[in-house]
Image 1 (tube, rainbow, N blue to C red):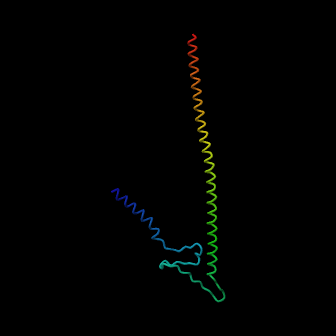
Image 2 (cartoon, rainbow, N blue to C red):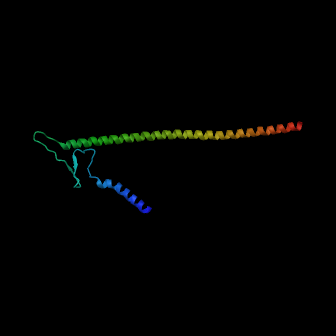
Length: 144
Protein backbone atom coordinates (compact mmCIF):
# COMPACT_ATOMS: atom_id res chain seq x y z
CA UNK A 1 0.00 0.00 0.00
CA UNK A 2 2.72 2.48 0.99
CA UNK A 3 4.92 1.42 -1.92
CA UNK A 4 2.05 1.99 -4.36
CA UNK A 5 1.35 5.41 -2.85
CA UNK A 6 5.06 6.30 -3.06
CA UNK A 7 5.17 5.26 -6.74
CA UNK A 8 2.02 7.29 -7.42
CA UNK A 9 3.52 10.39 -5.81
CA UNK A 10 6.79 10.00 -7.73
CA UNK A 11 4.87 9.57 -10.99
CA UNK A 12 2.80 12.67 -10.24
CA UNK A 13 5.89 14.73 -9.54
CA UNK A 14 7.49 13.59 -12.79
CA UNK A 15 4.34 14.41 -14.74
CA UNK A 16 4.18 17.88 -13.22
CA UNK A 17 7.87 18.46 -13.93
CA UNK A 18 7.50 17.46 -17.58
CA UNK A 19 4.18 19.20 -18.17
CA UNK A 20 5.86 22.59 -18.49
CA UNK A 21 7.71 21.48 -21.60
CA UNK A 22 4.63 19.77 -23.05
CA UNK A 23 2.30 22.70 -22.51
CA UNK A 24 4.71 25.34 -23.82
CA UNK A 25 3.32 27.03 -26.91
CA UNK A 26 6.76 27.40 -28.46
CA UNK A 27 7.00 31.17 -28.80
CA UNK A 28 10.35 32.03 -30.27
CA UNK A 29 12.35 34.53 -28.30
CA UNK A 30 15.56 35.90 -29.66
CA UNK A 31 16.85 38.75 -27.53
CA UNK A 32 18.58 40.53 -30.41
CA UNK A 33 15.65 40.89 -32.80
CA UNK A 34 12.43 39.72 -31.18
CA UNK A 35 10.38 42.47 -32.87
CA UNK A 36 11.13 41.22 -36.38
CA UNK A 37 10.36 37.55 -35.93
CA UNK A 38 7.04 35.87 -35.37
CA UNK A 39 6.55 32.20 -34.67
CA UNK A 40 3.86 30.00 -36.09
CA UNK A 41 3.16 27.19 -33.59
CA UNK A 42 1.81 24.95 -36.39
CA UNK A 43 5.06 25.00 -38.35
CA UNK A 44 8.56 24.18 -37.25
CA UNK A 45 10.29 27.23 -38.75
CA UNK A 46 10.30 30.95 -38.12
CA UNK A 47 8.77 33.31 -40.60
CA UNK A 48 9.57 36.97 -40.87
CA UNK A 49 6.57 39.18 -40.22
CA UNK A 50 5.33 40.90 -43.32
CA UNK A 51 5.99 44.61 -43.45
CA UNK A 52 3.96 46.90 -45.58
CA UNK A 53 5.75 49.55 -47.59
CA UNK A 54 4.12 52.42 -49.40
CA UNK A 55 5.41 54.40 -52.34
CA UNK A 56 5.83 57.59 -50.33
CA UNK A 57 7.60 55.98 -47.36
CA UNK A 58 10.51 53.56 -47.63
CA UNK A 59 11.07 51.18 -44.74
CA UNK A 60 14.21 49.09 -44.49
CA UNK A 61 13.69 46.48 -41.80
CA UNK A 62 16.87 44.57 -42.80
CA UNK A 63 19.11 47.52 -41.90
CA UNK A 64 17.41 47.89 -38.53
CA UNK A 65 17.83 44.20 -37.89
CA UNK A 66 21.54 44.23 -38.64
CA UNK A 67 22.01 47.28 -36.43
CA UNK A 68 20.22 45.55 -33.59
CA UNK A 69 22.26 42.39 -34.09
CA UNK A 70 25.57 44.26 -34.13
CA UNK A 71 24.60 46.37 -31.14
CA UNK A 72 23.30 43.35 -29.29
CA UNK A 73 26.42 41.40 -30.18
CA UNK A 74 28.66 44.22 -28.95
CA UNK A 75 26.61 44.54 -25.78
CA UNK A 76 26.88 40.82 -25.19
CA UNK A 77 30.61 40.84 -25.88
CA UNK A 78 31.01 43.81 -23.55
CA UNK A 79 29.02 42.04 -20.86
CA UNK A 80 31.13 38.91 -21.28
CA UNK A 81 34.32 40.98 -21.02
CA UNK A 82 33.03 42.67 -17.88
CA UNK A 83 32.20 39.28 -16.38
CA UNK A 84 35.67 38.00 -17.29
CA UNK A 85 37.27 41.03 -15.65
CA UNK A 86 35.14 40.61 -12.55
CA UNK A 87 36.08 36.93 -12.40
CA UNK A 88 39.78 37.82 -12.64
CA UNK A 89 39.41 40.40 -9.86
CA UNK A 90 37.64 37.88 -7.62
CA UNK A 91 40.32 35.26 -8.29
CA UNK A 92 43.05 37.79 -7.44
CA UNK A 93 41.21 38.65 -4.25
CA UNK A 94 40.97 34.95 -3.43
CA UNK A 95 44.72 34.57 -3.95
CA UNK A 96 45.38 37.52 -1.64
CA UNK A 97 43.16 36.07 1.08
CA UNK A 98 44.75 32.64 0.69
CA UNK A 99 48.19 34.19 1.12
CA UNK A 100 47.05 36.06 4.22
CA UNK A 101 45.42 32.90 5.55
CA UNK A 102 48.63 30.92 5.04
CA UNK A 103 50.64 33.63 6.84
CA UNK A 104 48.25 33.64 9.78
CA UNK A 105 48.22 29.84 9.78
CA UNK A 106 52.03 29.73 9.93
CA UNK A 107 52.03 32.28 12.75
CA UNK A 108 49.40 30.25 14.57
CA UNK A 109 51.45 27.05 14.23
CA UNK A 110 54.58 28.87 15.41
CA UNK A 111 52.79 30.38 18.40
CA UNK A 112 51.17 27.04 19.19
CA UNK A 113 54.58 25.31 19.19
CA UNK A 114 56.07 28.10 21.30
CA UNK A 115 53.15 27.87 23.73
CA UNK A 116 53.63 24.13 24.02
CA UNK A 117 57.35 24.54 24.70
CA UNK A 118 56.74 27.24 27.29
CA UNK A 119 54.04 25.13 28.95
CA UNK A 120 56.51 22.26 29.21
CA UNK A 121 59.12 24.57 30.77
CA UNK A 122 56.57 25.91 33.26
CA UNK A 123 55.65 22.36 34.29
CA UNK A 124 59.33 21.42 34.66
CA UNK A 125 60.01 24.47 36.83
CA UNK A 126 56.90 23.81 38.94
CA UNK A 127 58.09 20.22 39.36
CA UNK A 128 61.54 21.47 40.50
CA UNK A 129 59.89 23.86 42.96
CA UNK A 130 57.82 20.99 44.41
CA UNK A 131 60.94 18.83 44.72
CA UNK A 132 62.80 21.67 46.45
CA UNK A 133 59.82 22.15 48.82
CA UNK A 134 59.89 18.42 49.64
CA UNK A 135 63.66 18.49 50.25
CA UNK A 136 63.28 21.62 52.38
CA UNK A 137 60.50 19.97 54.42
CA UNK A 138 62.56 16.78 54.93
CA UNK A 139 65.54 18.86 56.02
CA UNK A 140 63.36 20.70 58.61
CA UNK A 141 62.03 17.40 59.93
CA UNK A 142 65.57 16.06 60.28
CA UNK A 143 66.61 19.16 62.21
CA UNK A 144 63.89 18.67 64.76
